[in-house]
Amino acid sequence: MGLSISCGQKKLDVKLAFYDSIALVDKDKWNNIVGGQNIFLSYGYLISLEQSLASQLRFKYVFFYDKENKPIGVAVVQIFNVQDQDIEQLQLLQNVSLSTIDKVKSKLNLKVLICGNLFATGEHGFAFKNHIDFAEKLAYLNVGLEKLLQSERQKGQKTTILLKEFPPESYNNIDRDNKLGYDGFMIDDNMMLCIEDDWNSFQDYLDQMTTKYRGRVKRIYKKSERLLVIDFSVDDINKYAQSIERLYMDVLENADFHVGAFNADTFRLFKENLGQDFIFKGYFLNEKLVGFSTCFQNDSTFEASYLGLDYEYNQEYMLYPRMLYDLVSYSIDNGAKQLVLGRTSEEIKSRLGALPVHMKLYVKLKRSLTTSLLLKPLIHSIRPSKYELRHPFKDEISVN
Image 1 (cartoon, rainbow, N blue to C red):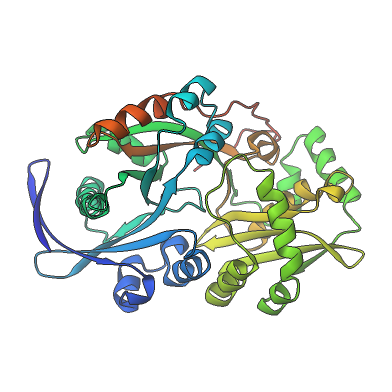
Image 2 (cartoon, rainbow, N blue to C red):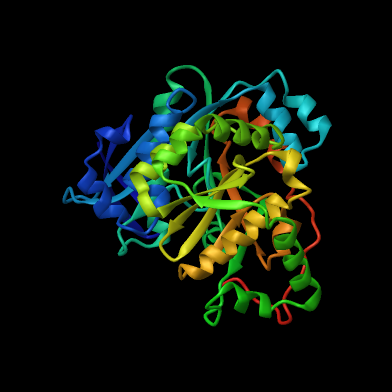
């Protein structure tokens, strides 16, 4: 499918190819575009995600070719249906007013094409060759997503596009010259800890803290000293699969909003396909698995991911904060430049020294009047959560 598109004063020629499964994609071509720049776009990650969630979501993969038929970019799209219960959950997550919820509830059955990753915070929806600038990437991406949108709309359901999700350096570029018809809105901050060059050990990190916060960390480790922490292998994940799913679901049921649910098989596939780039730590008390944390090594950035908790032991043994500080320790020991802790629990994460990175989503509403009338009040009433930012270090540290 060959197309000519405008990008400012330039005309761009592009050919598109669409795939329903990552297994149908030429792996070498995909890797040639993505390389090692983003684990959430890696072939191993995507095939793990698709194999474990195919019954809950649909997946689409887009290849972009230049006029000489050379691959220049790829994009990942996850498709799901927004139902009434999802709208109610969204109110809890993003502080949408109840009056707005009532206006759209029972009227909306919407298919959403998400370019990005529902299960990771950040700009993980596309990759292009280095010579293509950001404006060109968006132009290519927009035409590919529009073609997908047209295909899905032929099936009769209201459909829209969501671009998930951009930090300031990207959304400032988008907002500067947004002629693609997307509405942007701020969402909860992504909490990120910058690992300083002179932190060669966890103790170096502690030494940068004020007496108050350093004492707090020591109390957490004192209260949790009976916990045994084990790095899980594939065999360990299989062995404790039932407990993993129970702990994970306990956390998920306490979450404000989620789309799709992992299971032990998801974690097993990540470990099988990503090896040491997927870290799974099990927390035991008296030989009982009472919690786990997961993390992806994304080049020099470590990305904290899903966890499981037995809430019966959480407060007494400081299980959740212990997991967070263990992630800091692991990141320092393994040469990370930054630790991404994601959204939610912002105040707790700021006690580690994590700072907020503002994030923005973009949604295309203008094509369908019905969809626009239903969704615009919802979108424009969304506000990021409020929280108190803590300052644990003697000297302020910034996010790179």
